[in-house]
Structures are given as C-alpha cells and as structure tokens.
Length: 264
Image (cartoon, rainbow, N blue to C red):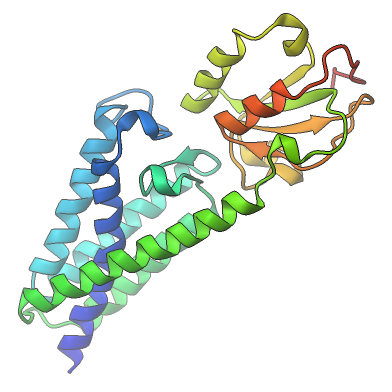
C-alpha cells in the first residue's frame, strides 16, 4: 500500500514537468519571453533544450523504481527552486506562451515544496517499484490538471490586469520600469524608438536591478511595466505590464499635456 502511494506521489510531481516540457516544445520560440539572452540556453534553442530536458526528467521519474524516482524529483525541483530564485522579478514562459508570468516567491515556494515532498517520499519509498503504466497515467492526469489550473489563473490575470482604455482620466505621461537584462525590455525599447519624439518625451524611464526598487503597485508584475501619470506627474488608474500593454499605454498619452516633475 505504501509503495503504491509513493509511486502515485512521484507521478503527480512528474505532471508539472511534463506539462512544462511539452509547452516549451509546442510553442514557437518567438512567442516566448525567454529570460536567457546569452550562452547555449539563449533563444531560440534555449526553450527547446529546456523543454526536452524537462520531458526526459519527467519520463525518468515515472520509469525509475521507487526511491530513485523520488531522489530524481527532489534534485529536479531543488534545481528549479534555485533557478526561480535567480530569475525572480523577470517574465518567463515556464509553461510556454499560454502561461506567461512573472517569476515570484510563489514559484520559488512551489518548487521548494516539490523538493521537500520528494525528499519525504524518498525516505518512505522502497528501492523497487510497481509497474510504470499506472504511474504514466497518473503523471498525464497531473499534467492535464496543471494546465487547467494555469489556464484558469491566466484567464483571471487577464481579466484583472488593467488596459490603457480602462483609464477614464487623461493620461499625460508614463513612468516606465525596465531592467538591463530583460529581453522583453530591449524589444520594447526598439518599438518605442520608432514613436514620435513628442510622445517619447512624456515617458520617464527607470532602470531597476531588483523588484524591490519598483513602486509597491508594480510588485509582482515584473518588467517591462508602467504607471500612467496625470499632468502633475502623479500615478493614476492601474499599472500595466508586458510589451503590448505598455506600448498601448504610451500610445494613449495625450500629446502636449505637460507632466510634472520628470526628474524623479
């Protein structure tokens, strides 16, 4: 009975890796906000390599016997927790283009919990294991459940995220927050360089190194993100994040409306 339970738990832990791997391989690299801009894992090969590695690890977790599968799961989730810690505040397509999100303490905590759960399973599991077929079935169900949760969360996030047209007040300026190691920020900068000078003059840009340097209203949104401003330079309405939303916000600036203190 205990052996069956540990097999099920390991298969459940394999589900998110399976979903993440398939998502990265399925999506076009151009549609992903990939945070690695140099080295062998840079786009467009990076998402493919990472997705393939996640699928291999997930497959090994359902094929290896008992304790060895749990040990592998512990190593995999510990590594993901460390990677998430290093990437906190950045936008990353952890689950492909469908679930673009900002890496936060939720990601770090979830992966840490997965690592700790795997350690607990490894301590209880036997060195041998049952037939892999039931574990494969459970892992597939866990992958589908993961996708369902992600799609629901993404839908809620899209419904609650402010868009420029939702702001009833006159937008006189925009305070933009970017970071130097953000590929999306570089893409946005290129798009903005083609805008008229009068509109760009109403944009105040702040380059940050960590999320704690951003206003509280932008915490959890990652970069690029922006605040709409009134004529006095005060934040109005709700902030936006992502290339498309920020560009739309800047496009909505009323040209010729002076913004207060830009030297902040």
